[in-house]
Image (cartoon, rainbow, N blue to C red; front, side, top):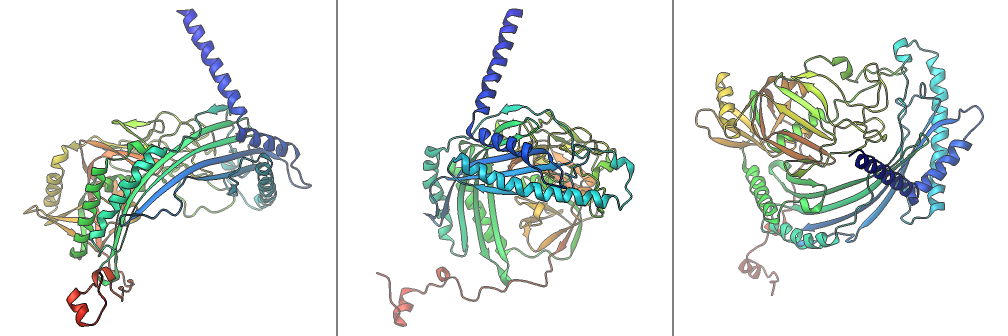
Length: 558
């Protein structure tokens, strides 16, 4: 047994060594490494410090889009398109003092499609030279400014950047473009977009499919050599029409996946498109919301997933307090650790490595972050309503000294996959009954349901009012949320006992299929500025009968 284990270990180490050497011999890795080593050794100007860290990122992406409108393919570029970009990160000083979190000098440069090593190195050299001069001058100016202010010593004692154990990791390369699947989907999109042709009042409609396959490289002077794949498929159905008074009514549907074979079947998409048409036409005739409302609201399906994403996707990241500039508008959740943020029945967990859930792939899962750090399998952010932890990267703070592995950019963090769990649940079929019960307890004649919409951007086209006496539902328009934020979840009432995965762009939410929040404020949308209605009528709605045309001497079609 011990011999077998030893042989297995030796085989595993040998495989890693071969994979590591293959990655070092990769064309892009060799170009990045050669230019990085040259610059880290030779970059220097009088009165400007030498760089102590340089890292190069390269993204090689192949994408293809099919767009259909009113039964026709209208894609301007039918074939795959290649895009290459590179970014340079350069720091002067040392790990303790480099002001990395104060500067945001990063920018991407476009690279040629051809794999010309000399041209790639020339472009990297120019960008490295620019980054060095800008960063070194900023560093000197900030060191001088620091002498003119008084700073909390505990903040001064913090390092500006945490050291990491960099290594060689090959997580996979560029996936092939699924040509056969794209060919199969082309007539399906054409057919799907044709469903809107019978409704000329819907003036704008489209169906498009975008497949993006990329490989990302990270090479740094710390010894990191990393390659990882990134894949995303987006199917979008969109429709819009002018409403009364110049308002624009719109409806969108997005399906995100990691592979084209994971998209819904055509019949499901056709049913979705027909439902979109029914809703947008119904909304045009729906009455306006009047007055105001403060009480329980039921969020269902996608509306709930987008609400959770909007409240938590970007808010629970670590913010470093500046030692030079005021932070008047910054919320430092680090100071709120141990405090109750939301209802005691809710728990929020980051699951960055979770690649599948109930048989479906997540679009947000990742193995390694922007800095080349591997995140934990899970991180409990909120337990029982109390803030327990935050997402962080390489910038240390008083409570977060080690790199967390959740960086998605220089100053951005992501859970990848975010799960909201509730320990107060009822059967999904009883959620409407619970909503009515909560409204009656407050003496309200009506309650409200939000469905099928992205509420995180304030666009809520579908609000349904339910009569607590008759249970009759009615769609309303012309309203807005007031003060919808994280604190709203402190008035959580109950959630459905069934959960679902909702994929977004490079992010996934796992949450109950519906949830009742007890204190949501709604007001009528009383905008004093409105778009002017279209003056000339839609030609498809302005066709005169043939007899009328003949009477007026107008030409007829033959």
